[in-house]
Image (tube, rainbow, N blue to C red; front, side, top):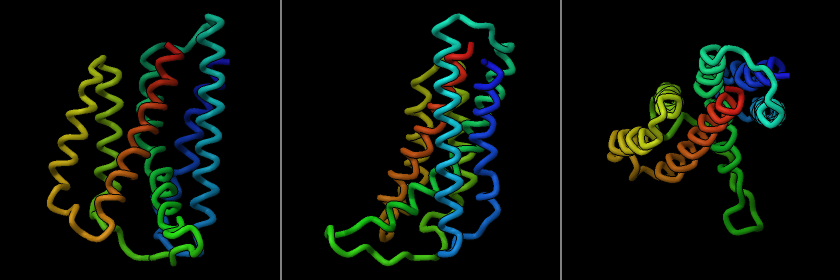
Length: 181
C-alpha cells in the first residue's frame, strides 16, 4: 500500500506537468482546472494511503526514496495548482452579482514559475532537514525580493494567493513523505 501512496504522490505532480508548457488562454482554462483537480485528487489519495500505512505500521520504501519523491512532488506539482488558484481568483465575483471578466495577459509578477519551483524546493528541504523555521526565512526572502513590485495593480493579492497555494502544496507533499517514513 505504501507503494501506491508513492505512485499517487508522483501522479499528483505528473498530472500538472503539461501546464508548465502551455501559455495562458481562455480556451485552456478547462484543462487547467481539470489538471488541478486531478492533482488534488491524486494528492488526497496519496495522503489517505499514507495515513493508513502510518496508522497500521506497514512496511515503507527506503526513507531516501520517500524523501526524493516527496521533494519532487512538492517542487513540480505546486506550480499548476497555484496557476489554478490564481485563475479561480480572477473569476471570483467582485460584488456578488457580476463575475469579473478574465484577463488573459502575461503574469503581473515576472519569473513566478521559476521562483515558485525554487520556493517549493527550499520549503521541502527545510522541512525535511527538521528546520521548520526555514519556512519563515524562505517567505521573508521572497517577500523582500518582490517588495518593489507589489504596488502594481493586483500584484499584492496574486503574491499572497500564489504563495499560500504554493506553500500549502509543498507542505502537503512533505507531510505525506513524513507519514511514509
